[in-house]
Length: 464
Ligand SMILES: *Cc1c(COP(=O)(O)O)cnc(C)c1O
Image (cartoon, rainbow, N blue to C red; front, side, top):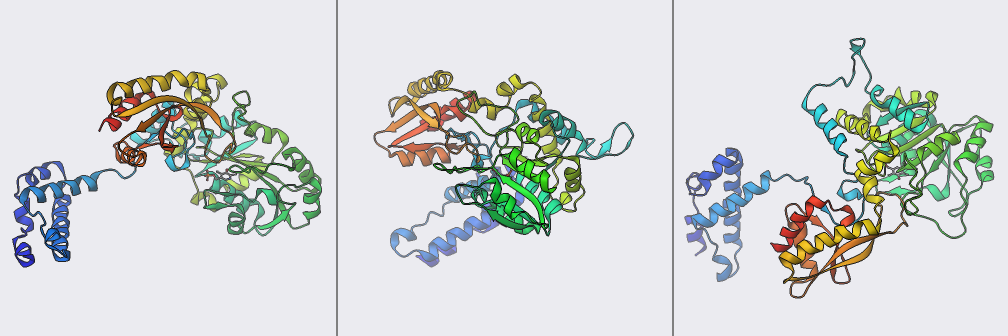
């Protein structure tokens, strides 16, 4: 039986002439189809050889079955791996789902620069070589009050560059409570080692006092560093030294102070449900010599690391050899400049920057949206699922506001026959994939992070 089947497997050329496969050649590049045929035949050969009983041996090698397998393989090869997904988790700055989504004007700017040549490093006035950093220095200075600014690939790079340029072979004093790990691949002590600076830990995990820093300062001290605790919070009996006290201490000893804000905010959102992330302005006003923050966390722009502060130190960073290795690309610059431009109007930014818009919605404004989604779902799949509008809580995400639970409106989906886990994985396998969470046997679709124009896709995914 096995030998018979193996002998009956067609050759690649024969498969190319099968109806169904012939048409694939018009839709897919020929080498892709040929490889798909080879791989398919190899798979079939293996299945036949490995068959352990009559049932397994009954491998379908009809032209139709082979053509179908080849077609699936072609689809798989050409389907983009990095794809848009629908974020139904309610986590606004979801690091695994790409953090911030861009404002419309940022998308336009990105397209414009991608489509044609640009003045990336060309000075249009003088007709000579220019610097990529010039394009957004002025707007960052205007928005933060800093003396100087530069942008690099991400905030991890900003911290690495600043430590390398300013504190190499010197000691950097940090509070023990701020030796954070972010996302498993960014640890302050590790970054410090890479930069050639040595770490001097002061204080206890929960409390660090100004005197702790003072005692640690020596002639080898190159920097006092404050790191925003981002993704955790120490609660109970705690005390931290404020950035302005650190700056005074630094001035006393002639040592620069760096504030790694992590997310960083350009506007104060304290009035919106206790969103009390520190603003960049506060650090600059307090006199920090270097402040670093991400472009794609609460700022709501593309992945980037923004460094602002005193001219002397920013300039040391700009001219350091590592600056080239961590330099920002033109697409990021275009999208970031457009995003920052929105901040010139503090009211407009809550409307136009998706991250800020989503994070500041209260449950009352989300409730009608949840009702609309529930209505559409009930209309189409109300017989198969039990659909209900519920109040839930969303998270900010992205290593910001770890304890904040934002009241939100969501649609809960319950299923009687098929399990809820199966439904969740079916939505994940849909095109576009829909990422939702399960809570108490119910699938929760948090409308905070779902765009209204994605409702249709959610309905058809549940209907599939
Ligand atoms: C997120 C974060 C970083 C890393 O920023 P990326 O932009 O992800 O590189 C560094 N420091 C702090 C405090 C952070 O929260």
